[in-house]
Each structure stands twice: as C-alpha cells, then as structure tokens.
Amino acid sequence: MDVYETGFNFMSETLQNEQETDIRKGQWTEEEDSLLQAYVTLHGEGHWNSVARFSGLKRTGKSCRLRWLNYLRPETRRGNISLEEQLLILELHSRLGNRWSKIAQHLPGRTDNEIKNYWRTRVQKQAKMLECDVNSQKFRDAMRYDYIPRLLEKIRAGNANDSVRVDPSLLPEISGISSDSLETQASSVSNLRNIGGAWGIDEQSNGWFGGGDSMESVWNEENIWFLRQQLYDDDV
DNA sequence: AACTTGAGCAACCGCTGGGAG
DNA sequence: ACTCCCAGCGGTTGCTCAAGT
Image 1 (cartoon, rainbow, N blue to C red):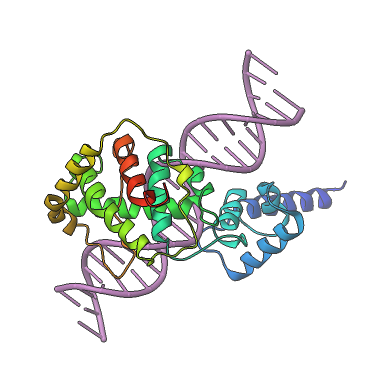
Image 2 (spheres, helix red, strand yellow):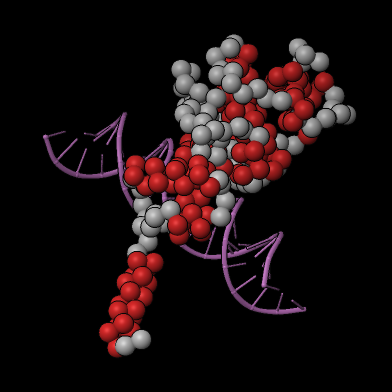
C-alpha cells in the first residue's frame, strides 16, 4: 500500500466517521419514511441498528424503531381515543401504573407513546384545574363520583366509538362490599358536582377526567366494584 | 395583524434488562 | 462471573398549531 492509498483510506475513514456522527434528528421526511417502510417490509421488524446502518437512513436504530412503531406500522391506529378506550386506560393504569407498553398491549393499534401523552396531558390539566394533587382525595372523588358516571352514561347512550369494548374480564372480581357503601357514595355525587364543573368536560367531546401517576389508591377495590356495577350490572 | 399562551404530539434521552460472547 | 451490545421502556423536551388577547 503506497502513501497515496494510505492517504485515501485515511480520508475515507475520516469521511465515514463524519458520516456516522452525522446523525439526523427531528421530524422525519416522507423520503425517510419511504426508506424505512421499504426496508422493514423487505427484512421485517427488529435489528434496528442494522436497519439504521443498511437502509441508507442517517438515523439511530432507536429512532428507526420509534418511527416504525409509532407511525409507520400498518396496524397503528390514529385519531381520537374513544370513551371506552379511556375507560380501559383508566382501569389498566390503576393495575399496571405507568407501564405504558403493557397498557398499550390491551389497546390494539394504540402505542405506548400515544397513551402516555394522552394520560399526562389530561392529568396535568385536570389536576391543575382542580388545584389539587393527582393523589389527593379531592381528585379521586371528583373522578369517581363525577367523571366516571358521566363517562359511563355516555357509553351507554351510544355516543362512544364502539371499536373497542371494555372486556369485563379485565376488571378484577371484587367481593365483600355492601350495597350501603354504594348509596353513601351516590349521596356524595351531588356535593361533588361543584368539583365536577372544574373538569371542564365538554359534553360535545369525549373529554377526559385525567388521572394520576400513582392511581393505585384511586382504583381500589371499592372503585372497581363501583365501575363494574355501573357498566355491567345489566349483563350480570 | 401581531403577539402570547397552552395543548397536543412526535421524537429524543437516559436507564434497564436480557442475551451473547 | 463479567463485559458488551442491543432492544425496549418511561420520562422529558421541543415543535406546531390553534385560541385568546
């Protein structure tokens, strides 16, 4: 190898290193989408670093994976989250916490990112409007006695997008709660209507009650039972 | 019309767990 | 047992756009 070739190799290497560090960020272009789509269609999902390396995209493997899962994958559903999906998210979050990918598994076509974004924007908004912490009793009560009944009402009225049904089996079996407790709860509803006003739920839209990063305390056995009664008592 | 503000969403960052060597 | 690499996950950031002033 003479000095010229060595020099050329050095230059190529330098150029290659520069190209490798020249990673694109930000919004994806249509051209990039097409490239990624074509590559995944041909080679299948997975091995995202290889996708990044061999597809011609100047993106990281992570970026390719995210773009595919959140946007390009054919089964990805986009658009408004239905009332029943909201209810399902609520229930699943109470059981799984912030495990968005696990929650997403129960909502076909919805991505963890979408659910996470949806949850966070609503929680922050509603908690702020109520001027309370998402873990506070006030917040829990407002959700339980105002939002959920309204949501169920809407679902029953058939306003909901029926593309997703809440599977009753997803709700845990609850026992040992007297019907008296329900009456007590119901009597509290009128008092909480005032709080409910702060939800700002638009009757024409889906609205959203929000929630919390730690909803275990909200979605306790009583609440599950309450929801089950409201939603499924006709079927049981 | 110009500017500000806030909501919604797409994408990035950093961490973690699991598998391979 | 240890290290390295990769995929996946959750938190965060920043951009866009619509509504309000």
